[in-house]
Amino acid sequence: MILILISGLIMFIVVKKIVRRVTTVNTALNMISKGSYDVVCPVSGNDEISTIEDSVNKMKLFAIIALLCDSNQAIRASHKGIRLELTKVKRHP
View (cartoon, one colour):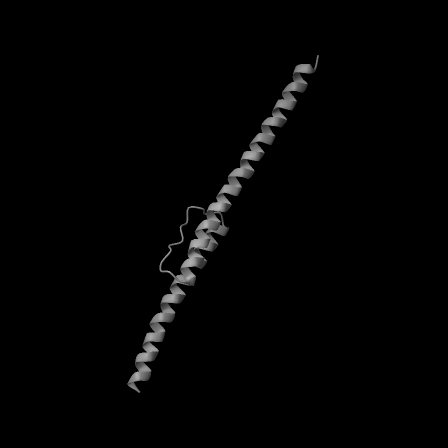
């Protein structure tokens, strides 16, 4: 009977720790999906969950790079459009 109680207590502690880590990853993902790119998902341990935590951080960096590239392209396109308009104005008598 005592062995069953001890086993149950150990299982409860292990499951609680796993759920806490998964909840932390989920919270980070939700914040990133809403545009909060300053979130850092803490990487703890050397297991499957820590691999997911690390992947979340890498994904966030790639998302930031993609956003910067897109905004840089938009800026270049807008400058090109302005230059075209200025050229039209200069040519107009």
